[in-house]
Image (cartoon, rainbow, N blue to C red; front, side):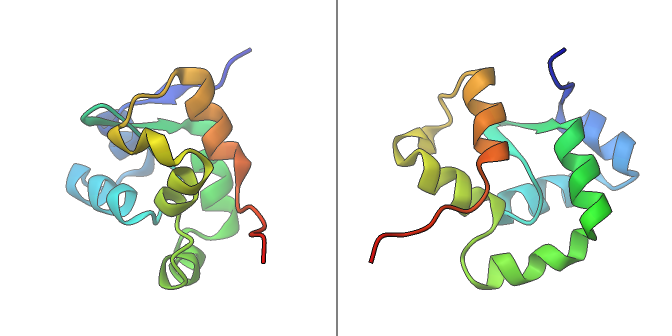
Length: 102
């Protein structure tokens, strides 16, 4: 069964946070999200994992330039315009950090 994909409004209701907070955290890479066109989408299972880890612990990732948005862009640099399929979206959220070649 596929993961439930949530809109910004649905994620806001689920997490009991304002829509503005959800959008800001997604834009800053402080929560698992993917931009598709001009909208944000969230996988419920990834939000649950994020909460279980302690949502504010991701501040360190953002400080190091490794927030969720940076990781998704690194996984698919050409997708910065937001043209990704649902399967690509799910894969980008699950990919996590990748090792860089030195």
